[in-house]
Image (cartoon, rainbow, N blue to C red; front, side, top):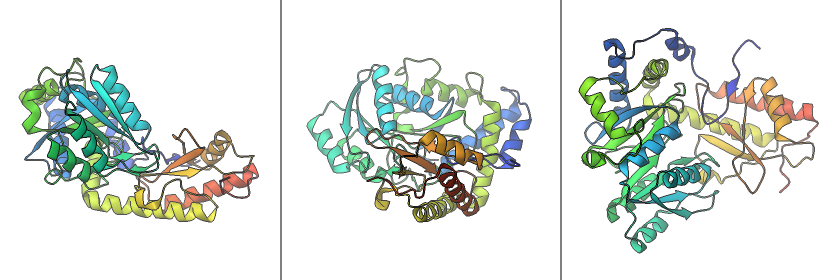
Length: 372
């Protein structure tokens, strides 16, 4: 194969050659040139959410989950009470890490095929005054559901509760405006819709809560308040930064801005989504979600009903044709997932559908039609 395989996953993603080439230089972690890259990245990130006046952004080494854990530990006091809105696997992960850090945690469950309900959130907040913070996963990629961030944010604001948003798979593609939506913390990462490489998360923290975050975290490495104070004072990261990841992200953001920013990225991903769903539909595949609640980020499909289908062999056949699919995250029914994000467009999505068609033929499966 004369090209890298296309990653149809929720991250890491396929990146451009320009982004890859940015990693071919070594950087000193305390050097002024590298500090300037960090400062430029932070300023660019704030612009994406229009948060220059209201928020700071704190980068952190590690995967996106590191930053979700850091945000909860930094923002929620040790005697705080967190309400996690749960309609999927990543919500459950947020609840688990909240409990592991010793914070009181209540889970408000919803069906994994439907968005969370802001009205249900408001009822829960009215019933339990001890809740201090709410955690929302903006795009729950376990199934691909888009959750109603503005409505949940309004419910939290009305009740005087803090809101922590996991925007891992939505930031940079779906609109988020800090001037219109109040959140205490919003978490994203380098290897998602900005189309950088994995290895760095970042957390937007509302300036009004910053002072109150001092001393909340029980972790040295994940204390975002300390990270912010040190970075403001020195321009440097407290501990060894992922230098190659940071410079790759700076290059990816330059391409993001040249493409037209968030609206242009959403338009391309939406076109990818439509191309995928139309093509897979012609092969008999059925999406799990109602289109009305589907984000154009990753699509969950029902597995084919043919008894010859097994995800591992299907995966390997698609991989041999140049495309990496993703297993399902649902527990009740068999599914698989196909991402629409990354440095790809309509041509790659059409090729992906063709690769799936070839995989079915090789496995002797006549149609992707599910058993249901």
